[in-house]
Amino acid sequence: MKVCRNLTAVFTVCWAVLGCLQAVTLEVNEGNSTCIKAELSASLSITYVSSNSSRTVSVPLPDSASVDAANSSCGADGSPAQLVAAFGAGHALGLSFSTNGSVYSVRNLTLRYNLSDASLFPEASSSGVVTVTNDSVEIWAPINTTYRCMSPTTIVASGDSVTFSRMKLEAYMPGNDLSPAESVCTADQSTTPATPTTAGTTTTAAPAPTPPGAPERGTYSVKDSNGTECLLAQMGLQLNVSYVSQSQNKTVQELFNLTPNLTSWSGSCGASRATLVLTQEPTLTLSFTFTMNTTTNKYRLSGMGLQANWTDMAAPFSASNASLDFLRSTLGHSYMCNAEQTLQVAPAFSLNTFRLQVQPFGVKTKQFAAAEECQVDQDQMLIPIVVGAALAGLVLIVLIAYLIGRKRSHAGYQTI
Ligand SMILES: *[C@@H]1O[C@H](CO)[C@@H](O)[C@H](O)[C@H]1NC(C)=O
Ligand SMILES: *[C@@H]1O[C@H](CO)[C@@H](O)[C@H](O)[C@H]1NC(C)=O
Ligand SMILES: *[C@@H]1O[C@H](CO)[C@@H](O)[C@H](O)[C@H]1NC(C)=O
Ligand SMILES: *[C@@H]1O[C@H](CO)[C@@H](O)[C@H](O)[C@H]1NC(C)=O
Ligand SMILES: *[C@@H]1O[C@H](CO)[C@@H](O)[C@H](O)[C@H]1NC(C)=O
Ligand SMILES: *[C@@H]1O[C@H](CO)[C@@H](O)[C@H](O)[C@H]1NC(C)=O
Ligand SMILES: *[C@@H]1O[C@H](CO)[C@@H](O)[C@H](O)[C@H]1NC(C)=O
Ligand SMILES: *[C@@H]1O[C@H](CO)[C@@H](O)[C@H](O)[C@H]1NC(C)=O
Ligand SMILES: *[C@@H]1O[C@H](CO)[C@@H](O)[C@H](O)[C@H]1NC(C)=O
Ligand SMILES: *[C@@H]1O[C@H](CO)[C@@H](O)[C@H](O)[C@H]1NC(C)=O
Ligand SMILES: *[C@@H]1O[C@H](CO)[C@@H](O)[C@H](O)[C@H]1NC(C)=O
Ligand SMILES: *[C@@H]1O[C@H](CO)[C@@H](O)[C@H](O)[C@H]1NC(C)=O
Image (cartoon, rainbow, N blue to C red; front, side):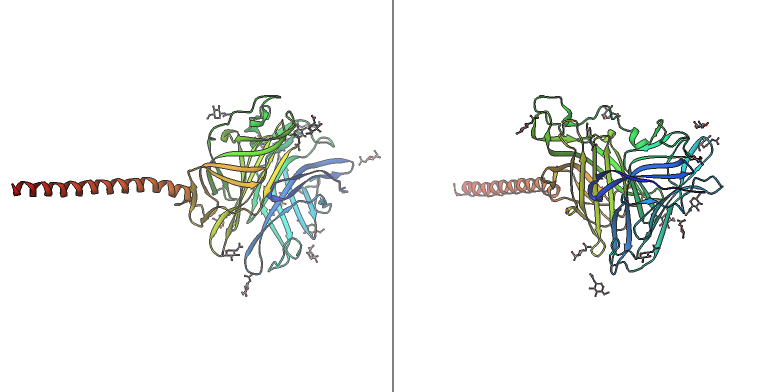
């Protein structure tokens, strides 16, 4: 069997704090025909032990990744149909497929990485190749259709994870090109691309859009490979974005509320790093990265990124910052802030949060642990206490004055 390889870098997408994601095209061929084809971007999140601590690195699948011909197969001779993309010093990402004649699906995902590669894993305390697998990947489609998922999809394998985005994939292909019939993943279906509900979509020469009011509160959660909730979030989110408007030919500043029932989400959990990615197709991706300091057991929101492509934008908008220090709390607690908070991410992007409660680590039984509240909430709680104390003081003063007054007047009667 002769398996050929083919690889093209189609375009490069910079995706939030996870770094620049390359879109790669991978094909497994047998003879003159293609049996598996994938166009996708992937970001690998790998946790390893360095000299003293546990570290997590984000590795984009580079456009130099190529199909590993020896390990890839069309599955003709009884072997499983398999796509293995190899890159760098012995790293690989593999997908195994199976079919029952009417449906094909990903049987398992395998991630193999070489800890001896100091350029990706500096100061790793162990060396050698690590292989992790997830054999319950929820990717399937009817045969002769292309599986399509533009939204980020995270697949966790042991402590590591792979986040695919902008994915088109087909196995057991009837022709050499992806079938035009598409099977769209549920994350993409939950939104209606025809009517993007962005504040920036008002038509040409429209008056300044009215401020959208407070955003609705959304509930988001991330599950680990066992299907257990490991990150919980409830919050109303409002984006404040400055961009160059095509219709007005100048920089404008817009407020934009996230609509929870049009938002899909994904993410990953780890001992020291957790992510939550919110997507409002097709125009918006907002990502949060939480990190845990394992020495102090304190966590914080350390990174945020926004990509948007609203119709009035002269160019797609992208902003991210990986060295933030917001929403600080302690392991075993959630972070809560009912008051509005403004998180400045980049000069052109800030995020307003409303009625926020998050817990990115140490989630047990699907429920928030006791909350550590933000200073503003604590101050607001202080106001009624101060007012109450002042009132009590006033009543006391009046009472004392009355008693003294009464004593004086009694004394007055006695002198007559
Ligand atoms: C592949 O294509 C070439 C030229 O089009 C043809 O000569 C050859 O027989 C084909 N091989 C197979 C296995 O179909
Ligand atoms: C790592 O641990 C060693 C002792 O185990 C200590 O001397 C060293 O300072 C630590 N390094 C860091 C960066 O914490
Ligand atoms: C890939 O092929 C090499 C030999 O070419 C083999 O040593 C390795 O185990 C294979 N990897 C997988 C994941 O099958
Ligand atoms: C993945 O699935 C293929 C085909 O079903 C199987 O041969 C392979 O052993 C599986 N790999 C792991 C690590 O389970
Ligand atoms: C792992 O990386 C080291 C250092 O880059 C290299 O010498 C070694 O050959 C690699 N191992 C494999 C299996 O590729
Ligand atoms: C193939 O699998 C799908 C999903 O598991 C099932 O709905 C379908 O009936 C199966 N088809 C055959 C021919 O077994
Ligand atoms: C898929 O397409 C091929 C070629 O067009 C056809 O022979 C086959 O019957 C199709 N399979 C299904 C399940 O529709
Ligand atoms: C999944 O469950 C197994 C067995 O209950 C446990 O050992 C493992 O740590 C769990 N994995 C995660 C990511 O929670
Ligand atoms: C936009 O404004 C700049 C100067 O502010 C001008 O040079 C340019 O021609 C304008 N473009 C359009 C399309 O009006
Ligand atoms: C979203 O929620 C609003 C109000 O809660 C409702 O009016 C609207 O129909 C919902 N839209 C969808 C697509 O569910
Ligand atoms: C954890 O916190 C300690 C004390 O604030 C600090 O010295 C250390 O650098 C932090 N570690 C990480 C990985 O941020
Ligand atoms: C942004 O949107 C415009 C039109 O709405 C489209 O032509 C362009 O390709 C989009 N850019 C990206 C990077 O998606």
